Length: 360
Ligand SMILES: *Cc1c(COP(=O)(O)O)cnc(C)c1O
Image (cartoon, rainbow, N blue to C red; front, side, top):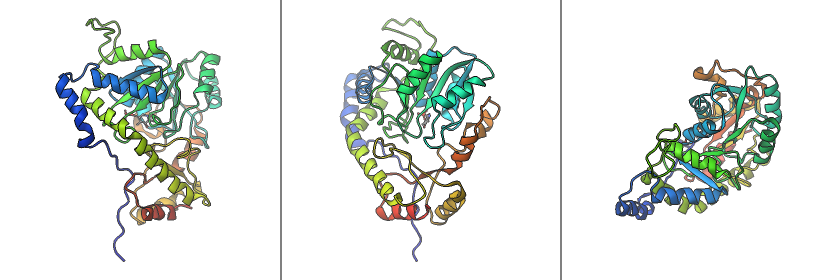
């Protein structure tokens, strides 16, 4: 039998030279390379329109988007309630905003912090909670309505880490929604991010924070910020990526459907709505706990890469082992079962069959 080909878990593909050329030529012509140049402005406007946001602030990456949104909304020195089950960037952003992560559980079915879990965690909080960071589960759209109500009920500001959800958003409320434009995300530009909000005063302030707190053409610092801008070259990649986005999401949707139809009568399941209501750049199978080891053993034996994209939770990372936490019972139970499957447009039907054959 010939050696099995290696099946890769993720193979990012950003715009290639041909689609970039007209945009790079615009940069050559304008000789503006950063500082909210014409391409950045156009990219920010197109991105905001796609998300349904009145205001958009572009940032250097998704982590800095979360950090800046929290700096604008929460008083420093207090706790930020956040789910333990997220990419570790969320916890870094919370700390960089001058807050201490207070880790809470996730719902085992939806894989997200719910308002119910948050209320329970608040009742046991060891100190004042100044903000809640709600994380989208691997690109699923967050429940903005429920969290706006939570903010109204508790007075605690809410910020969304919707890093992987940029193509799943359809209308943005006042609570800032932060996305990542990293190469591995669905609208990849290399490194980049954005804050969306219906509150344009907030996104204007966020934009000022990305450029030394300058609010206008006058070089006067009115806020303590930093340099979190994107260059015109990054915006060029973003504009070209947006041109190709309809084809890209259609292909990812078809790939998700190819998995979904093969999994119909299996115990392993996809996240609710994956491929149908929303699509992103990764795909997870949620596998019954008793079968996880057998599944990963079979994938390893068949040269199929897999990944726990969020590991086993922030509390398992040494850098965050000592932050306060509420009960994490459901996180500990479900995190090992969330297995990132090979998901990229180079996969053949044969390879998808091989992956699914490893799943119960
Ligand atoms: C990717 C990701 C981030 C970080 O985004 P960067 O652009 O890499 O900084 C934060 N949170 C979640 C949930 C992510 O998936």
